[in-house]
Structures are given as C-alpha cells and as structure tokens.
Image 1: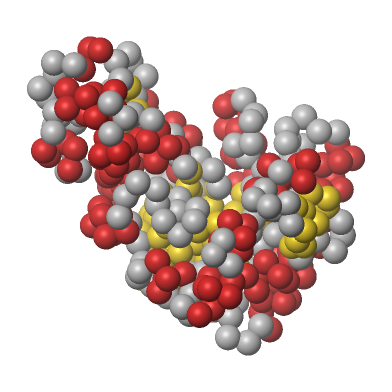
Image 2: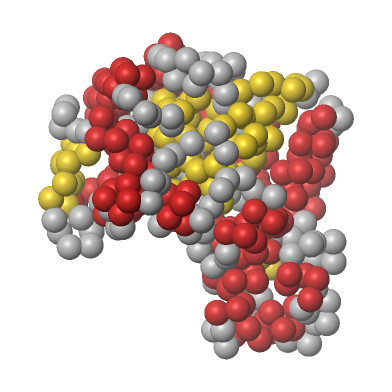
Length: 373
C-alpha cells in the first residue's frame, strides 16, 4: 500500500492535526477544503483562478463524467487533466451518492448498481470494478470506491445490509485496483453504517483493515440534524485508521468544517460555496452576507476589506448588489471566487491555529463571531 499521509503536528487540546498528502500532481497541505468540479469544471470560475487562489486538489464526478463526455472522449485526451487543462490533483467520487439520489431510477444488487441515466433514461450498470475503470480513464489522483449511501432513519436491518454490501464492494475494489495494470489512482475506502453506532464502529474497523491508502467517512450530511452529524462523526472517527488521510464528503459551511477538523478530519468538499455564490450569498467572518438585500444598495465598502479576491479588491457591496439583482453572470462569478478564496484563507488560518496549539480557542472565537448577528 502506498503511503500518502504524513502527520506534521497534533493540536494539544483536540484531535485537529496538520499533515501532508502526497499525490502525483503535488502535495496537499491538510486540513484542506476541496472545490467541487462536477463536470470537469468548478462552476463559475476559471481553473487558472482556482489555482491562483491556492487550491491544488479539486473534485470531479464519476457518474456525470461517465455519462458526459464519456470515457471514450476522456481516453482520447489521456484523462481529465488534459481535457480540462487542470494540472493540479483531482479526486473523483464513485457516483454512489448520485445513484443514491436517483432512488427511483436504480436498483442495488450484490453485483452492483443498475440504474437509468437521468439524461436520457438509458440503462447502465456500475460495479465496484467498473467504477475503478472509469476513474482510471479520468486519471484520478484519488478515486473513491463504490458504496451504498443510505438516508437517515432507515431500519437497522436495512442499514446493516447496505453496510455489508459496501464492505463486499470495498474488498472487490481493493483487490481489483491493486492488480489493475497502469492504474495510479489512490483508492479511498468509505465507512458506512448509517446512524447506528455499532455498525459505524464495525464499518470503520473493517474499512481500516483493507489495503486502502486513505479513508472517507460516508453516510453523513445526508439530511440528518446538525447534532447527529457532530455526534456520529466524532464517534466514527475514533475507529478510523489515523495513519491515513481521512475525508468527510459533502461539508462546506464553516461550522461543519471546524467540527470535522476538531475530530481529526483532513479533507472535505461541498458545492455550497459555489452554489451560494451563484445565488448571491457570500461568506464573511460576521456570517453570511446576502447581496440581494437592499441594505447593500449604497454601500461603498467591499464584502471583506481583508479579502484578496477580485470582488473585494475592485468592487463595492453596492456594485455586487447591482450585479446580483440584475442577474448578471459576472455577479455569480465574483461571488464564487470570493467564497472559494474565503474558505481557502479560513483553512490557512485553521492550520496556523493548529500549529500554535490554539485551535480550540480559534474555533470558539470564530463561531461566536460568525453567529453573532
């Protein structure tokens, strides 16, 4: 098994940690947020700008890239890096969550997932092996295995059955990927178990025992209450191998990120930053700013005077308000750049706080201010 993760420092009061994840397209300093680029692009922003902000790990989506443009196109370009002109790292999810969200169009069997395309209704099958093959065509630096994602509040028996299927698929993916000629992707196993602690513990220990260089904690941020997310993340993380990079999928708000960091999570992603930006909402240390509100109409100040993004360096809140109110494309682009810049800089501040053994105090003060209004 290839070793990806090196721990640099552990915070003295929490499980928050600094580390390095060494990938083929560069080293990622952790904890790190990853922008989502579902179709081979981070929506509303140039790849050059994403790199300029400082990111060198973004996401692609196996399900969507398999349907469009398809593996034949990706193979002809020797992968998504060349196709999209991105020279940083790419993590691709397995498509499991997308198939989960298309519950009326799919059927889960021991062999894999049978589903219909949301585009044209055509029939397809994802097996643990095929998902690895697709991600090989993509050229993923980190690839996620196929798993069974489940909603909260399902019966124990159904949760255990889904977990057992995930474990069976994980073993198949691990065996297949490790013998696949020319495959350089680093496979991450995925912990499941729904909201049953004995299943969570069992899944964390089983996935940790397999020959994966990294591990994701799945089945969270799927509609549960915030306190349930905090509780089950904290409980599950203690049983996940801490010599490997640990990843929680689908979290992108500062409170969720800080809670994950406190529990020793290294990587996280979410569409929230870009989706909010396209809809005129932006992050600040004083909470979310809704640019459509009339209070900004005559405001000559930037969104954040300390921010280095284009919106904050060149434009006022009044201009951003105008862009959003008139549905100008530039408004969403600027707001997207701001949100990604904000999260990148927030994680830099988080890493500095961990380095100086003051993460607990940083988290407390940050959240008090963020929710003060």
